[in-house]
Image (cartoon, rainbow, N blue to C red; front, side, top):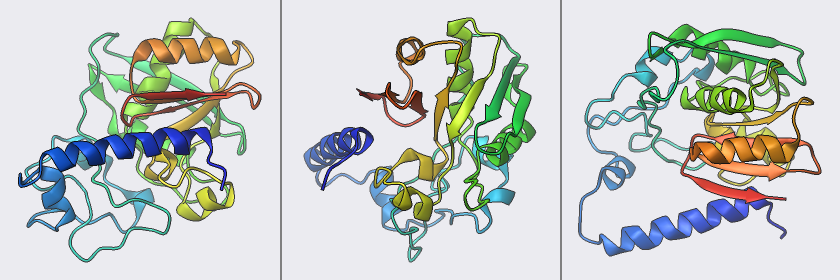
Length: 238
């Protein structure tokens, strides 16, 4: 089986995580408690499109990281990992940050302040979640607000006036499998976007994103887009 670059990068990351966890044998970590179904672990929202974005962005209480409770089953192709959307807005930019994007598949336009007064705007992130939905199935999932923030930061670094185009946002597990995405792709967790622009080259966009040192970054030169996500820092490219 041929693995795509994202899959290879993720496998290396998971292997490193597993090795680290083995060195902590005998210790009770937050991750192990959640996977074991610790009391208070929240279940996944039944209707992702109607998710309470404000709750996702609030600092979580102990045991409430939105991971799956004991007995819950992850979607086929998705990994049962805890989601933490409590990250604060990076303070290396203005208190108000407007993001404008177009959807290459639906022609939808997103044009909202994602940050106001130094805080994420819940309604804007909810709108972004709809904008970046799985257009093949018209299925949406609450987005990690750090993902559009990363896109905004790349746009700012490039000094662009024109908007990025969204090539791929959220993918349902079925869609991800159908197009040959990475088995544990961050697209399935609403933490990734593939972006493109005619105003800058793929290497230029990739270089600006690399300067961020935030999340995952993939360069797909022949396909004309760059992958960004709010997962662990890692880098791959073609």
